[in-house]
Structure formats: structure tokens, C-alpha cells
Image 1 (cartoon, helix red, strand yellow):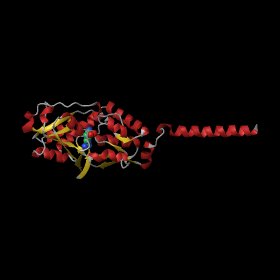
Image 2 (cartoon, rainbow, N blue to C red):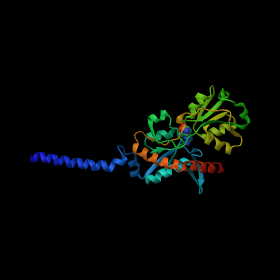
Image 3 (cartoon, rainbow, N blue to C red):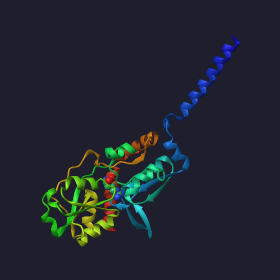
Image 4 (spheres, protein in one colour):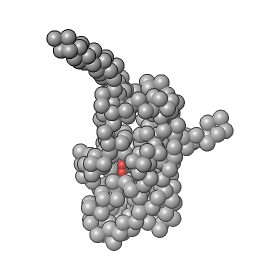
Length: 272
Ligand code: ARG
């Protein structure tokens, strides 16, 4: 009898501890994705700042600084998590990889949450919808009346972006050239080395605004998939972090903040 009591008592004590342990960690669920960042006190964000109005470099008090709508979102996330934000700049084709290797905690870079990418990364809910357009020289704009007008034309896209497949699949017969830097893509277009560039609309509009010799080929319509909307990437299994980020995104969307960030960043990018 005595022995049984002891066992029952021990079991009770054990389950009580188990319950307490569960209670304290219930909000951060199974994984430590959120806790890890809180413990470090820093959120490292991978981005490619050649993508105004979402991320671009500008002089702030004489210092080269990365700004833009994505950076504004990153800052809000940092604030809500109570941690510092470290923006880590790199080429776009390294942005997602740095999340996988753990060099960055999350990636915010106007990243389209495609089905392929979703197999490898967790994505937040989307925060911005975008469509693809074709950027051309104004002097040639009349030549482009449909997606078939690009046959045998040189079309440039940024390396590692979904625009690679948009150009390959939709601009039939085009010679697709992938380049790492958008600045290089633009200078090749302006100098006539390439004939067209596929970009998402807000990015193309920014370039048109700053380069009077460029324009969007208005008659050319590209199909956009449902995976063209932008989302924040994080390592697979980041449930706690993702839930937290989704709450923040919802608030920012509902309050019209994201639209405001994009608009303000756009104005800032074209005034530079
Ligand atoms: N939305 C496109 C993609 O995910 C292009 C993103 C490019 N972003 C950048 N910061 N350069 O493939």
C-alpha cells in the first residue's frame, strides 16, 4: 500500500511539473524559432537592396543606408519581438540560401512565395501582390505588341528571381540573359545590349520615373500566378516565429500601413 502511494505521489508530482513546463512554453509551441531570436536579441534579415521601393540604398545623414517598405516591415517585427534588427545585404540569389544556412533569421526581399520555394522554406502570409511587366527603351516601345514580339530579342532578368521562368515561359523565343545586379541590367538596357527586362510593376515604374529613355511595354500582358505575391521567408519548421510574424503582417495590412510604406518609399526612391 505504502509503495503504491509513493508511486502515485511521484506520478502526480511528475505530471504537475510536466503541466507547468507545458504551460510556460505553450505560446512558443514545439519549436524554438522565436525564442532563439529573442535570446540572441537580434533579428538578422537577409535582403538584396536593389529593389526600390521595397529595399534600396540611400544616403541617410551622409551614410549609405538600406531603406524601403520591406525594411520598415522588418523594423516593426524587430520592435514587436523586442530585438535589434540587422540588415544583411547580398545578391538576390544568396538571400534564400542564407536563411537555409542560418546566416540570417528571415529574408525580406520582395520574395514571391512560389510552390517550389514553399517546399524548402516557411513563408509568412503575403503582404503585397505584384504583377510582371516588360521594361523596354522608349524609342523601341512601338515594336512590342504582344509576348511574341520578343522572339530572338535579348531579355534580361535578375538571377535567382521568378522573372527567369516568367521570361523563359511567356516570352517565347526570347534569349534570356540572367544577371546578378539590377543596376547592371538597367545599364545594359539603356545602352542597347539587351532589349527588354522583366520586372514586377512597382520596380519597373520606379526605373521609368528615373530614366526618361525607358518605358513599360503597355501592350504586353504577362500572366501572373497566385504565387507572385510577396512573403517573408524563414527556415522550415518556424511555426512560432511564423505565427508571430503573421499577426504583425495582419495588423500592418489591416491598418493600411504596408500601402503607406510602399508609397512613401516609392516617393523617396524617385527623389534620390
Ligand atoms: N519577386 C521576385 C522573386 O522573388 C523578385 C524579387 C527580387 N528581390 C530583390 N530584392 N532583388 O523572385
